[in-house]
Each structure stands twice: as structure tokens, then as C-alpha cells.
Length: 129
Image (cartoon, rainbow, N blue to C red; front, side):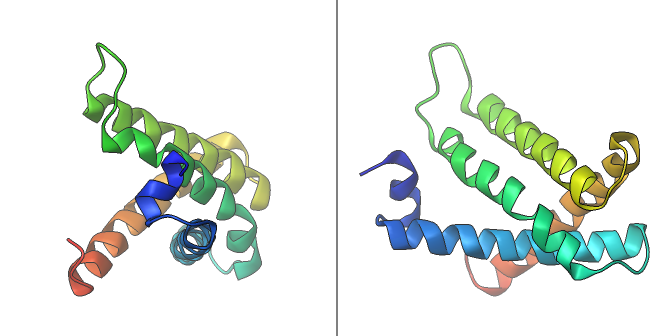
């Protein structure tokens, strides 16, 4: 079993479904943030950008589960994983929405805020948190 499969319960199907649900969640929250920040935008742009941070966050989730290299705290590695995911989101949003990096940065921060708030709310509603 690969390390990524242990987080999703094992199996390739579980990993694919987790990726698709994460990409859908990121697409919805990115579209909400872009509508709030940019104005009326097509939802397809969010669908183009969302798989990149979804893939990066799933690939880096193993750092939040322990097994940190000697001398590193697990919380530091979680912070690095979040930072790398935000950078991937910045590049994907900049490309999908045809924005300069400087213009895309506030949109990415707003997307992060929307995703955090909606993720915590859904986690509480579904009883996961």
C-alpha cells in the first residue's frame, strides 16, 4: 500500500474519488472567490484551475500525518505543505484567469479563506470535526 492510499482507506478507487471530490470542492470555492473578487466570470475557469491545488494538497497530505524527518516538527511540515499548495493555486489561478501573479495573489488568499470557512462548516455539519 502506498502512503497516499493509507490516508484514504486504501485502494486506487478511494484515491481517485478523493481527488475528484477535492477538485470539485476547490472549484466551487474558487468560483465563489472569483465571483466576489473579479466579478462575473465563467465557472469553467475554476474547473481548469482547481485540479492543480487538489493534486498538490493530496500529494503533500502525508506530511501532516507524522513521520517528520529528524529535527523537523510536524506542524512545520504542515505549514510547508499549505504554502506549497497556495503557490500551486497561485500559478493555476494566474494561468486560468489570465491574471498577473500580483493580481492573482489576493484572489488566492480569498480562495483560501472561502475554502477554510466552507471546509470547517461542512466538517461540522457532516460530523467530521
